[in-house]
Image (cartoon, rainbow, N blue to C red; front, side, top):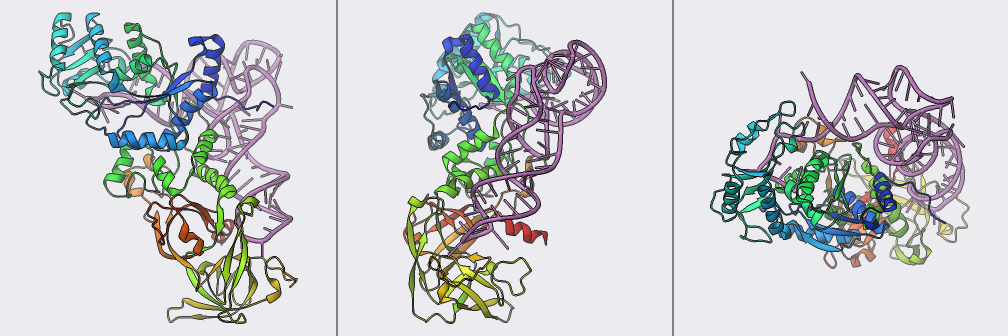
Length: 555
RNA sequence: UGUCCCAUAGUAUAAUGGUAGUACGACAGAUUUUGGUUCUGUUUGUCUUGGUUCGAAUCCAGGUGGGACAACCA
């Protein structure tokens, strides 16, 4: 019965540790965001990894905000991050903040000073950078490197007391200015910032650097497996150094490759730019790769979790095809979304042999993949709207839709044949005239006729109106971050098309924000938060697979 | 002229010294009252050169290629 699935490299590490009895077999992970932006799909990978690992091995996961830089952080971000994690379906064991440990971290720093392993440096940022050397040249010792323990203690106390201005002093670890690892060249531990912190207010005028806070925070929480992305590989020796010198709980860090996805960008800095410069409407714009963006777009938590599972985890750089994410949401929505008819680009169709004013309520199944979804009725009449795209004046050979002399089935209704059509002065088709076959009604077809195509429609007199927002990829190149020049110059100008008045089945008037549907033959749509009673707004989550579009493109 | 990480179909990811498999994509066909879904089939891969071994994607060495590191950011 056991499912034979191979383990990813993190699961292997955890299983080996459990087998060896490391930490008594305990597994405790954490997800450590900085509250300076919204979570994106790359964070979702990390969340699924950290929470998923703990869940699988009966462990726990902390949510810890690494809030060590008061000037970029905000409670708005804290709240959005918590909401997104919950929405993804995960529960944290403890909600914690690096700022909870500020006093403890301060004491750690004092301990290092006392051991002669940290010193106050009065050099400017530029001087420190200059003395740092380069990756291929060793650095130089700071002239302040050999201050006495007493002087260091006094100055560090004064820094805490706010007696020195921003930038005038820092506390550095005394490691090795000649180390080939840049992060070991006397890294900064504390800097002076007379800034208001979202949780500690004005209590502190010094704040620990990430490198001095992160590893010890994991240690304080007794995190067993500290999982992060590849760029921190070379920081690990420093974290291990602090842990060893302070003789505290040895958390171990393991690194994986961050998620990259085609046709999008995945850095908070770039996403912030898109928001601030108005290229999108906000962090939750449905075109954004943020979790809140995907939520608004109509993605489900499970589709994102399945995506995270399918992409796997490794240490090599990757660029995942966004098509895989789309596959994951289609796969789910195909089974769960009710079908409904909507015409986005309408053209009028008149059935000349169907009595004017007569109507019929025709049964329509809600979901062919799920019988329990039941059925509804749709109103039929002699005047309909169909999709403009479903009619061609001079159709090519394999066009299985409407054209002069061609026949199609109207979904849930009759087979019709096109007799004629009218155009306006500009050459646009204005009305299509058809005749219907009375014996061909769906469910009781005795006509013996076979048609290749079935199209969707709505009755002109009975249709409701809705706004529909059609989204396409935000960038027009596969890997905007890798292109030369400003990534914003690769923004897809057609990433959003708004249909102000689409004609839809009246049932959609009752749609509530978050409700998901398949608009037959068009795609999956989700009622937007802008929806108000009687005036629905729909976001296109993803199109259906369209083999005809592909065929047509081939020409 | 440094240190570290990495290298398997188009994209991801397995195979943990013993038959190179899976998913997505692509292509072809069947089914279909959604050109959807479903089903069947096809296609394409171990960066390179040596070494160890009865046997190497896997272990070792050299090369090549990609990535990371010089924020008082995280």
